[in-house]
Image: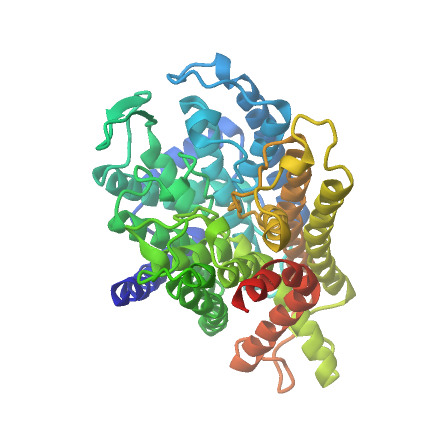
Length: 572
């Protein structure tokens, strides 16, 4: 057990050590400074030329959002039809069929919005063509979209007064060519050399040690698994995701994949400090986010290594901890670390089954997604945290009797209303979606659908409620992990979560970009003795308090009905 705990500490320290120089590199890339990958400029120029893009064209916040939303809509339509017709297209050695319309609707949205919620089995639900040219493609562009949007935020904070948040197409292209592709190549090679498949062969027939003959899926998985983690996507090539021995063969690949998940969110924090020349501000945010992460991680690890009280009552000794749903090669502590990292960062990949987690662990996983700002996904984590900052600035201004200011710009009614709207709409989507699912389950349990609502769940009671609450929360947070006891591949869940996915992705992006765009146009106000110091520990603690209070007030009731009630039901 001590070895597992040391492994967690080493993973996190290695992530931070790699993220700091990477953040400095990000700053140079987006500032146009000289870097080692400048030899890619002709490739980027070629892309701009064939796409008819002027990379130097200034964009207001409205222009920026218009460009981002337009291309995302195009990708959605492309993915939808590819999934439906994949059974008739090449690169399908296992002869997998096309998706139904509702499943295609959900899957296309899910991967466009960086959620990668999978209501299908990776081995049988998609083909090699759609795995590569739809899913892997979308994992690159959705991650680059989030990063491009946070760079727009940086541009708004960097200048004293500006109407230009940068060119979306230019930032987007640089993100793929200079950051995502080079790092993914390294990760994919390491995965391939450690046993992850990278061929185009179909299923292989093997004989197990018990003498059984089984079919094992393969395919060019290494590249997709690299970007699924680096880009905080999370969709598994195999249905078991990173609990699968081919997707995550050994402890080295487990460390590699968990480091890759956290790398860019932390690097972007450091990049912000270098880029806007406010390193202390970035360090304060990093510190608060790390404290938030530890508040979720420590109870999870403690809960998992102490085992399940229900099993202990049967007289079974749990020397290795709560091993239900865990891989023996990783253990409960490392699995607990992964489960928190993947839920706070919106990756959503799993190396254990969250449905088998202890109630305390499930509570922490849900809180990670509900806050969605402790590191958070590529770019969007900082955008979500920015919403909390605006609320904290507003409350702090009220407390001292001054007009709220942030980095030399007044925070007025419009900005606060947008921040409040984003926060309230997230709560509405999560609780409204869960309430709708409960209503249908209770009042229409035997409705004559392809799958009756009474067949959705494998678990009744508190845990069954948590399964539905988790599914909606994961969709809204663009996480994609799931409590697998809930069968999500039916019209109700595919359509309902599809709309939650769209709103949960774009509202928290549109809101911060609109806020920073409105603020950046205002007259710059030099700092004075009465100016709120946003790079102080005091303000960091204030922001943390806002996060806790907003989350507690918004989500305490469903948390009590789910994981908290389940905890007390087995802890008596």
